Length: 116
Figure 1 (cartoon, rainbow, N blue to C red):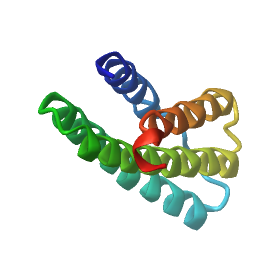
Figure 2 (cartoon, rainbow, N blue to C red):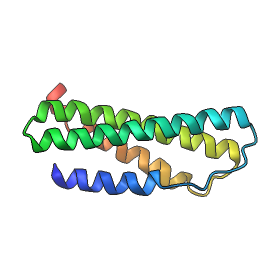
Figure 3 (cartoon, rainbow, N blue to C red):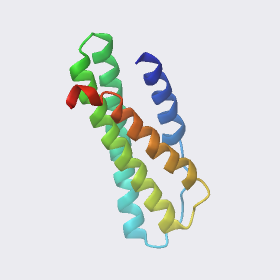
Figure 4 (cartoon, rainbow, N blue to C red):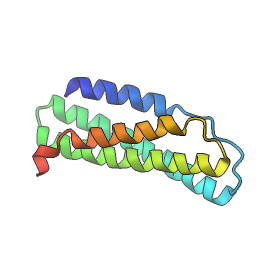
């Protein structure tokens, strides 16, 4: 579990460090998606850090629920960034972001047995 958090945090830093989007063709939609990206990436990071703390404290059930929430925010944030990039015509990094979506899904599915 701890290795997954290290990997997830490194992944977040790489993905959330992306700043290559500029000049939107539809500024209202672009701005809306970028605002959504910024809000949800922050929430995803906060939930992931909270889940890590809960795991360290031995509360696996709460940690898994929190990690699942982090995953949902991470997926939504990344999807918003993809939409913003598509509006802007910046598609060079979309493949990496789509791979990131899969990583967020994996992070959310790690604790699936707790909730089934």
